[in-house]
Length: 190
Ligand SMILES: [Zn+2]
Image 1 (cartoon, rainbow, N blue to C red):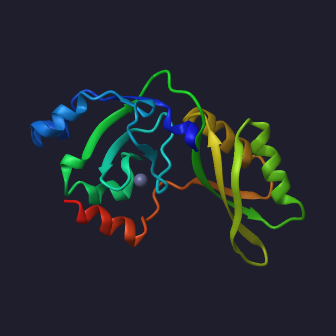
Image 2 (image 1 turned 180 degrees about the vertical axis):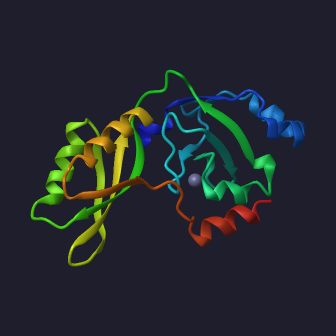
């Protein structure tokens, strides 16, 4: 995923929150963030932000700058140390491919996984991982990690998946619980 680090990002103008929480945060918003300048930046794997999502950056001493969606549940916990939260936004010219996670409920049928994969790649989205996470006699829950360009691209892919007849539900995985170890690391920093 090294190609993703090079995406250009720009700070948002002062978010309402930052005005309250002191000058330290305000100074940070003047940073222009570019992965290519040596700043360690990664995309959180709990919420997999993609262009079009409102985002915030969390400064973690172990992991550098980690980009989350604003709605990620884990951000709520990080807000205990507001100096570690930096408002950011996507550069309007951002391009490249971004990982995103989907959960698809599908009626079991011979060859259905191949059909699903074909539908996705026909919309120019790459599949990084595909796995069946639950299965009973009739339905399977399939977890997909895809690469898409942005939310519009994702919407097109999801719409196409819904057209497959045995598919009963498609949803983006928006916020997974972080593992315990990541959480305790971040609280130890403060
Ligand atoms: Zn997150």
